[in-house]
Length: 240
Image 1 (cartoon, helix red, strand yellow):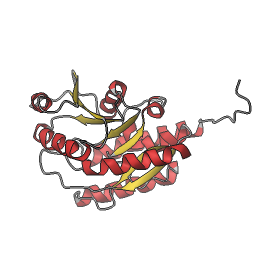
Image 2: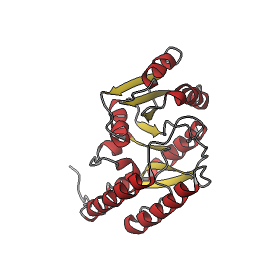
Image 3: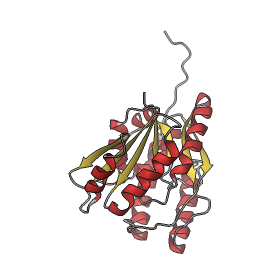
Image 4: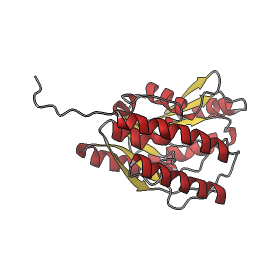
């Protein structure tokens, strides 16, 4: 029985496939029953072939491909929909998230889920990004935290562990992965953050620019704030 489903969305990350697969296996083999789901989001390079090659040596690896690129949030949702585990872990496919942090986040979720925690979010306290990325992220996190009150210092971290059931119950929209803590809280769940390692990108190139993140984030932030204001959580006084 699968305990944890690790979902990794990728678009044109051929050079990062095998190294990351090896690291996930090193982190989880012998520790728990897991599956590794890669969602190939319409890659035009050799990503799919590298995934096929990796699958020859990794029985836990499953590959799902989109015919064309539809974005990270949709790729994550595809992986979660196909997942067999009750608990989901996500991480970015560029190698900057450290799979060695997965067991600690998973343990934190299991220990705190009886108290209502549905999401454990990674916190990249010591980011290994360019100066402009660090500054823009700090600004965005500050504005988001002020408006949404999600009590999460780093919602942009791709390393997360959460309840599959709680995730699929949320209203879906593009770029949702950036606001998952606020959406989980809107649904009545609790969120906690755990500090994780962050690494420099060694292979490939970033697919996001400063202005891409800025303008998309502004409109999405307004939409999430709108959803928050319209959430209701009735108190059940009798259950037949």
